[in-house]
Amino acid sequence: MHALRTFALSLALIAAILQSACTEVSGTGRSQFNILSVDDELDLGQQAYVEELDTAKKAGHRLLTTGPEHDRVMQVSRRIFDAANRMHPEIARRFNWEMTVIDDPKTVNAWALPGGKSAVFTGLLPVTANDAQLAVVIGHEAAHAIARHGGERMSQQAALNVLVSAGFQLSEADPGTQQAVLNALGLGTLAFSRNQESEADHLGLLIAADAGFDPREAIPLWQNMAAAGGASPPEFLSTHPSENTRIQRLNELMPEAMAVWQAAKAAGR
Image (cartoon, rainbow, N blue to C red; front, side, top):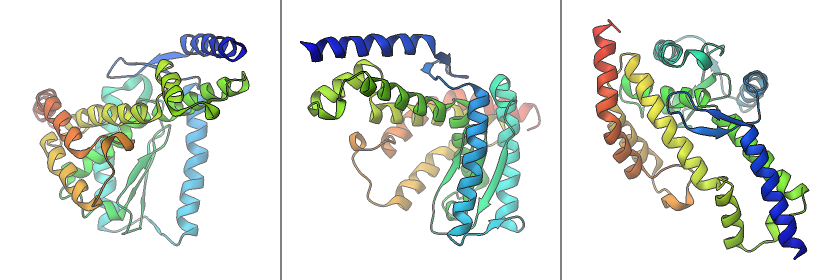
C-alpha cells in the first residue's frame, strides 16, 4: 500500500512538472516536455561542442579548414542553415550556427548539438552520393536542434530522477511495470527516441527542400546508409526507425517536400 501511495504521488508530481514545462515544436506543433530554456540549451551546446571537438583531436582526427571535403560540407551547410532560419525564425535565428568537418574516414556520422553547433565526419561523404543527399543529413541534424530534442531528452531524464527521489525505485520493478510507468508518463525511451528521429526526418526533409535540394534524394540516401551500416538490430530494439519504416514515412512526406522544393526553385534557390 505504501509503494502504491508513493507511486501515485510520484505520478502526480511528474504530471505537474509536465504541465508546467510544455513547449511546442516548431514546424510540427507537437507538445513537448522541456524544462530547459533556449539560453540553457545554447550554453550547454557550446560547452559540449568544445568538448566533442577536443575529444576528436585527442583521438588523432584533424578538424578540416580547407580542401574539397571541407568546402563541400560548408557550401551545403550554409544553405541548410539559411533555410532553417527562414522556416523556423523564432528558434533558429537565436542559434549561432557553426559547422566543423572532422577528418575521420571510418565514421559515417554527423551531429548537431543544442544551439546549432554541428559536425560532419568525412566517413559520411562517400555514402552521400551527391550534395542533395548530404543536405538531407545536415537538414536532419539541424532539425534535431530546432526541435530542441536535446533539451527534451535531458528533461525526460530529470523527470525520471524525480520518480527515484520520490521513493519509487523503477529499477527494482519488473520490466512490464517499468515500461507501463514510462509509457504512462510519455517517457518510454525507445519509442521516444524513434519519434524524435521521425520528427527530425520530417523537418529536415523540408529544410533541405527549402534550401533548393531535391528531396527525392532522401530515399537513395537512406538506402545507402542501410547498406553502409550492414546488419542492424530489429526496430523495436533500436532508437532509430528501421530503414524500411523511415523510407515509407519519407515517401508519405514527399508531396509536401516537393511543393516546398518547387517554391524554392521558383524563388531562385
